[in-house]
Length: 421
Image 1 (cartoon, rainbow, N blue to C red):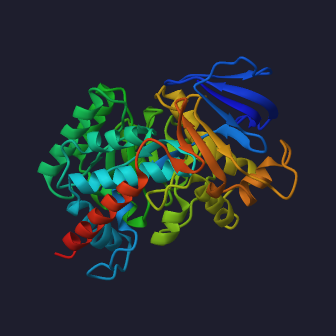
Image 2: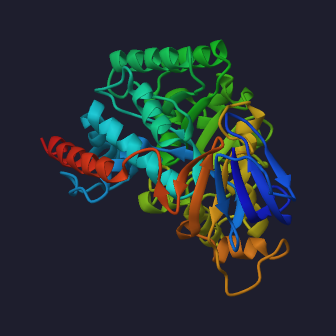
Image 3: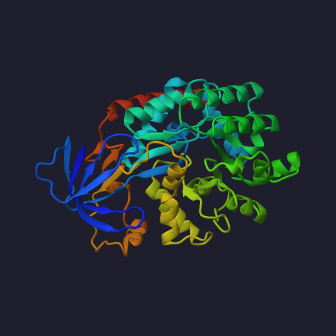
């Protein structure tokens, strides 16, 4: 049990402010209690939150652990001229080079970065074509060490041949047998009908959903039209993918009116990744006629959900139907996704303590202005995950961060050398 004294608690749903003391229960999906009197109150830890804000921690709607060691690496052998070549010469070169130690380093550093930025739940989409078997367990164990909850999947694709697609299907089934997870696929243009059908069968067998990139670039739509005589969302709908409320459709940039209607009328969720779209020069997200099931991700660019929300808001002023309210709604929609589908690890006992000393008043009526223009990850002071303190005074508690960063640097050098071979 953790006791938070003298807290200013912000209800993440209503934005109501409350001066109170909070008892935080340990364990999955547990509650918090508001108490007036802290005298004689038994607690394992007590944190004085005077002058600080306490609210529900954050969650990442779409991440890529496998990209963690890319920061600062050399330019690719060929300068990419389009999105397909970005995949071919950068990301598909990188993911083929990954081995056990590289995956572990990537997962540990990602989990640390997420936690220090206030996120306690990560939805990840992984690829390592030459180290598929057991890759999900490596990531899960790394996340568990740091203390963040997770919803994982392996990226099934036939771009490296049917044998690799088979391995991806098998890894997915092995993981789903004993873990909460999703059926991951790369994108329509790298998954043939037979593999797509078998993945859809896995989804039904384990009551899961797809996690797939959708129309991130026009190439995806052109390939689908030329190969299957239909559009990407139509193809997914024909396989029953949109029926599951667990399905996550990444990006959804180049979709037409009919596809938007199919998504809006479905149970699926869309995850927006503005900074990645800007970096890859693939287009701009627009939520028009997509419905309410829209959440934010980082797409492996970084692990800072507050930064993602701000980018979506500012860039969206010229391209999207986004405002203060909807930016915050998308930021928090991932919690609705987790709760709706009864995934573990995002209970009310997941909290972030913000040391946000604003020069202006902050209250329920102007919180959204502070959310967009003021609060950032530098203000994350403490983080509680499943009732356990995993970040204290901005320092990770469950693992030795310095040792992990040294390990990560060693693995990054190995990875970069391997990519140049």
